[in-house]
Length: 491
Length: 128
Image 1 (cartoon, chains in turn yellow, brown):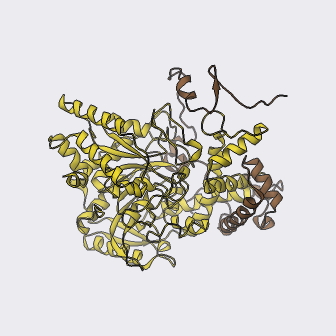
Image 2: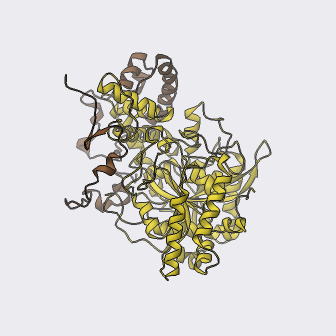
Image 3: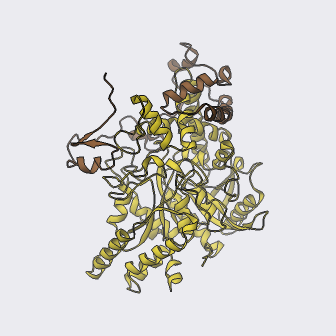
């Protein structure tokens, strides 16, 4: 019975709640029991069962009174960089080990206002810096497909918790691929909407010109439904767009057709270094979409090769500035020193992990006097070129199809010793982030790696600004062509 | 080219003033330079940790130097995401009215503070 509940999609779970087949308390308890039984995957940083069950009971009471809300009673997981009022929020950093926010992020407030239930605050790379989930002060998260393999990152716990049926969906944040890559590595749908679609208010900041909230779900329909809830203008974030939020989920059934749609395949994404099995999966998907009536067109994104290098200039520059606020005086850890400067340094070196310290150093270096133009300004020129590549491509095509990540999920520790090797994992997601475009990763299928381990592969769909509907349309159509796909349920 | 270019009067500003150094001029960082950077970043490293870190740091710098070969002559730096996503807003970022919206939350805000006394943050002495 529990497995039957947990393997429902979010949309099915909401239907079941609506038709009183089960209660939110039952669903939430099933999630809590699953989390408890699967702690070896290390998906969660904080679980407050009492809080979760209280929220579930309130949802059930509201439903009993005939009240309606889009997500009433649906148990969700929250990446631990969304501030939750009264519930510890760590960003997976030792620095924020005891930080309990006095306010709620806009994204989570919208979820609770829609009736959703908070089951857990989920593990991640510290301050969202990483692509494997290994940079967490709370330990690495394992991929539910294969223990000992990374689930991707930085939204590692969100991906693993949804793929392991611990929650029905989860929030994530994506700065350079932190939703799309872990979605690909765990066989999920992951959506990073257009920069400015969701408010960043109350999200622990990494690189503010790139950070964007998004979601993990097991189907495109679930992702579309949840994005409707968290999107929209917020006066507290001046970059959040004052645009209407389309009803993406209700448009799916009528618009999920790819006939006549122009889909671009960027040749710069099918290069040496791309795993041949990943390439074959994405090319196979393109063929099936073509057979369904889409027109596949080769497109050119000529400055792709510079994007990762530029990102590792401007993203650390923003990170170094954003993380200057962690001084150990008003919140977080404090390790006293003989002077004020020593107190700052002691607190920060104690509180931040190695990758965070690395990026602060890089960021301050590229912003320092004399080097600013050579590094930072030059990187922002490259960013302009990368964005212009997409503008040109979208004059030819409606949507771009590419691999989400160049490799299959790899083993924990495999790339930990070489930061640059790990940075290249984001080669196909970073250009999209640099341009602020919406993108979605959808599972293509499974392959077996050299060690004989069955692993999922994801393809990335990229659309022009504000055209999330096209992503959902193509992904939903692809799901019909591909057939059912779900991560295995491990008892 | 579809991307914005610099107006003629701003072109080649990097060549003037002598401020911009080329990356190739500082291909390797000395321990003293790394230590200065750590001090400015308000981070402390043991000498051994700084040495190990220096190698990684150097690898990253070598990697990002690739941007120097990008064809960026007369390309304007992308300084605002709004220019891409909401061009009509790019010249004037929206502002909120300057009115009080939150109640006093001193106790809640200080609940996560490392040290407080009588409603104040206790900080290290900085005046002798």
